[in-house]
Length: 431
Image (tube, rainbow, N blue to C red; front, top):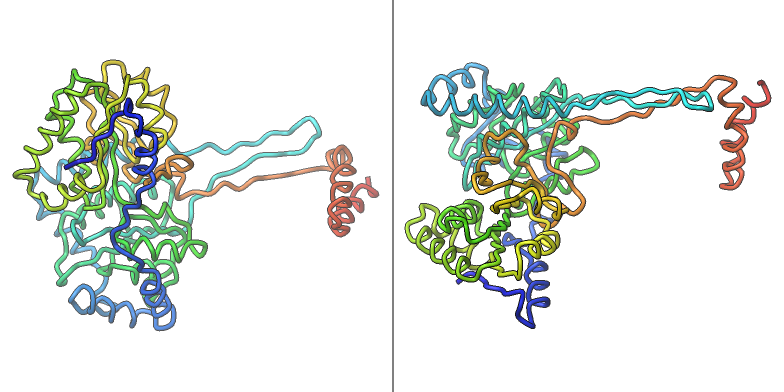
């Protein structure tokens, strides 16, 4: 039975605190195993990748067969059901249009002291994308990770996708082709992250690694961070829904379970001001779970990690949401804009009764790679900027350094760095 909390109960505050703090990492400590895999790939290169692929994915690869050919990508696209291919194209077009708008402008100015100041944005040279292939394969994640990289101007985009039993997923390959991925490799797991980060035979290293994965993939990303940039180390999926009694409880139950079906460690939270509506959603969720195709997964997530919270007013729910800082937030109320103004922390927010989170997962346009586990308090989702870096620019002539140089040299003196001071004072002496 899903956890039920009522904000009017005397013990609500500590119970909610406990719920927020509850860990949902169901995979145990994989740190040492991942460290061993990474060390092996760094020492043995592609031989280690091939050996680990045979062990974990059950098929053999060499430096040639590991790469998906252009012909294979083309065949995957042509083999798809036309309706599915059209849906992928619509999603790709919408995601591309949204992320191309995120490209930032460069800037230059000459300030009052005469210094030239500014910044410029440039893409990384190469990016790596991990496309999972365990419990489920997600072509939508390929689009969401690859298209922003291309919108940023990344010239070389590498994708690694596990192929259990050596069987390619044609929808994932078609998505890679639509998104403009340059290289696709039939490898997965922590060894794929290590190969992209450090290089392995024909797989040359990249600058940024993105994409979801299991606990081993997440831990591998954590361990290679610093050698490469990351999107994030993602935790289990989560959704919070603020809903009033004017909603159809079946809609809200379906929205909650749409995230619960991802993984047994997922979390779904309903916040409502109507106890009767809370009962109706709980009943609707039970009915939908009864014959749910992913019942074991969704039911575990709903029973062990989720909650229904009754609040005094819909406005009160905003403060609780900020404590949760959820990956996804639905505002299923009559006037969502008013409630939006009260919420500060969420990865993505969906406005109104007809904006389910699932719309954002596929083709609304904004990215579905979002901060989890409360990280929305300080982090943003994946975007075009994930694949770009900002370089600041400073220029000065003799008049400009005369205007500010003495103060800079004095600060260098205060920090005990005479070489810094000398480099400035020599120029001052020449003006």
